[in-house]
Image (cartoon, rainbow, N blue to C red; front, side, top):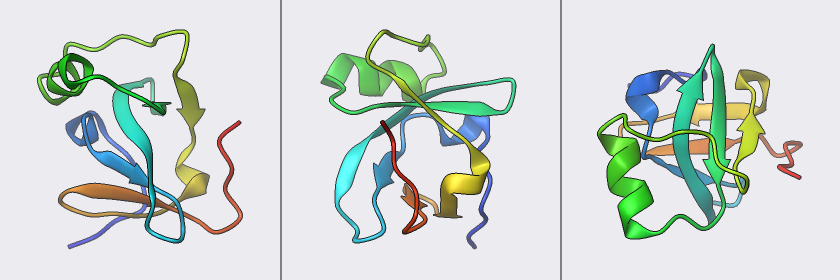
Length: 84
């Protein structure tokens, strides 16, 4: 089952561009806004999966309107989306 909004349960998932290339990981969701780390280390990925991550200086905001689908293991962005 897929959906198009992110939740705290999605923390740690890969974020893919519209072409399916991994561009980072969702490290945290705060107040409905996700934050993507473009180059997380293994520790950051584990912390995100456990819900222990905080917004970092390298994290970029991700709004639901930029999300095409959220699946069991990844978040795919819409073609028009761009993370600065």
